[in-house]
Image (tube, rainbow, N blue to C red; front, top):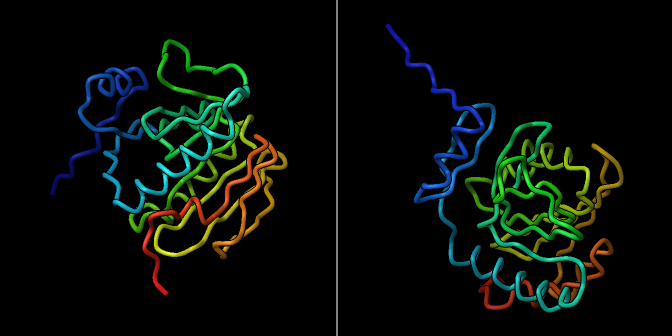
Length: 191
């Protein structure tokens, strides 16, 4: 009985493949993983967040970036595409890689059934290794549930849960207030 070992890819090989790939892939520990598409709810929420952030950050030193911009986390050598990132100040890029940011201030993930446990667990632990990260926000797409982790120090965060459409997500790090009613605008939620 023979087993085929998983192929190992270097970071450079991944970046070369990703530069011409038709679909996005995540890279971790020498493995490449295809990323799945998003649901209509997922896209609607991320679009609403992008509009809210662009409006509130206009003229400031922070910029929102959609899931088409890659994040590299050097300590764990993870390349991933968060649903939305906000970068403040000068963008810091990976060495020899003009398409990977290393210094987000805020990361948003819209939860999907296939990625929820990863976004809450292992991926969150990777994100905690990003020195510039001050806020991590998880947003449910099938109910009003926004979870806000305020990063206090490496591997240390405080937690806040918002579950009412009348609540507002306050992100002090970027001086933005995001009403949940506007985040969930256009989403049909169960009564």
